[in-house]
Image (cartoon, rainbow, N blue to C red; front, side):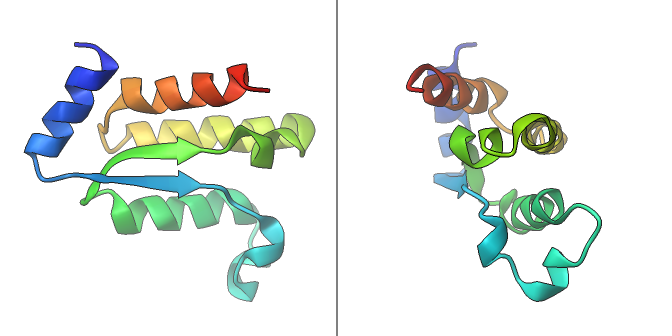
Length: 103
């Protein structure tokens, strides 16, 4: 099954939303900023709150790349967390690759 077919399947399950994870540390709530891994914790909270309705997640690579190795680690952990919800992995990966190729 390719990315489009997986997205169509999600749509048939009444999941139409694509949630952007363009996490900016400066805009995080104070209670999350003080946690051990604020960006990842914020991403997890967004994913937990939207996974029931979401067909795919769009990750803005630049928000993670700017923080070097640590940012890429958070990106990887975020993607792994999304996969725990069995969403359209191919759609997520296609978006990540598209963003990376645009850089």
